[in-house]
Structures are given as structure tokens and as C-alpha cells.
Length: 154
Length: 115
Image (cartoon, rainbow over all chains, first blue to last red; front, side):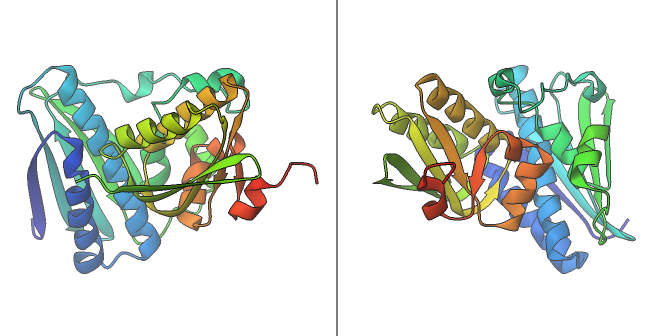
């Protein structure tokens, strides 16, 4: 295991910018990802961290923390975001109504997991010993499938 | 530190909020407060100019959805000015490009529709 960077952060939104700075540095300087893929990674990791921060808040952990581990692998970057929240089932997420329906506007949340699935080459969710981990893999070549069909699969 | 700037102006009956910074979970509460504050002044037609926005996540998109809901409830609407391919792509992935009228310039956004 080489080129592994591990962050242990307070579960607070004010640190998202710091996380983005670090993953950007890993993606550019260590993995040489093209700009569009760096942007994909920045957003996917931000979404994963926001969910981790929310999950930590749900269990009322005072001084709760999240973990972000970045690793350069053959063909890209792997980022794992972990929290000690209650966990969730990504497959149980209820899809939003179509945006053309007025009741879609009642939903301000729930776009994070679909975004991660649209942006990353691989997204997986795991839970072990009370820790939820989201694993994101992003390689140098953008996924060529149209964004809409990808988000439908999500 | 919250990275958010909003410059407000008015044109053609629209309130224009030129937003700058990184829009994520840390700046979203301030973004919501500022934009909802603009609606509260009895001017529910709002153009949100995202030209100066370097980053937007789903939390901030949720704020925009909530602001649009309030604007419409008050008889107005929200239009977006979106010039960067990256933000256009995020709107497309989330399909919010179909929910918001989006324009490539403030000039276009303040024109009456159908002309």
C-alpha cells in the first residue's frame, strides 16, 4: 500500500473545503487525473462527506469525527469516507418524483447518492463494527455513458 | 470558513443575486438565509447568477429548490444564470435543469419569456 493519505476530521461542514483541497492534490499531483475527473472526484467526495457529517449528527455524537482515506491505485484514485452514524441502505432510497411535477419541489435532499453514482466509476457502501464507509473510485477516463442514463440506473 | 458572496441588484422587475464562492454544506445555511431574505421583500422574481460559483453540491442545489418553491408560492419564479459547463453538468445529472429555467446571461434571464 503506497501513497495512502488518511484524514481524521471533526464531523463539521466547515472542513469540507479542506477535504476538497486534499483530494484535489491527490488527484492532480499523485494520480495526474484530467481536470474533469478531478471535478468529479471533488463533488463525489463532498457528497460522501456531507452524508457522513449528517449521519454523525443523527446519533448526536458530541465531537464526532469522520475519516477520509485517499489512495492512488492503478488507473485512478480511491477515496473512502467513513462515519460512526446509524448507517443506511442506499438501495432503500426512494427516488424523487420527476422534476416536471410540482411536488418534486418538496424534496431538497437526497441528491447526494445519485450524484456520487453518476460521477464515480465505482461506488460501494459498507458497514462494519458500527462504521459506515463509502468507497469511491475515479479513474482517468470519464465514463462515456450519458449522465441521464447513469442517474436512472442509480 | 464560509466562502460565499452575494451581490444584489434589480432589473426589469427581477431581483438579481450574483452569487460567488463555493456552495456546499458549510455555505448553504447562509445562502438559504440570504436568498429567502430577498424573497421576503415582496419581490418573488429572482435571478440567481451562478457565474461566480466555483463549486456547487447537492446541499446547495437543495437550497435553490427550496427558494424556488417559496418564490412560486409567492407568485414569482426563480431563473438561473449558468455559464460554467461544470455547473450545467451537475444540474443535468440531477435533472434540475428541467425544473429551473436556465440562461447563459443575466440579460437573457431578465427578458420576458416568449419574445
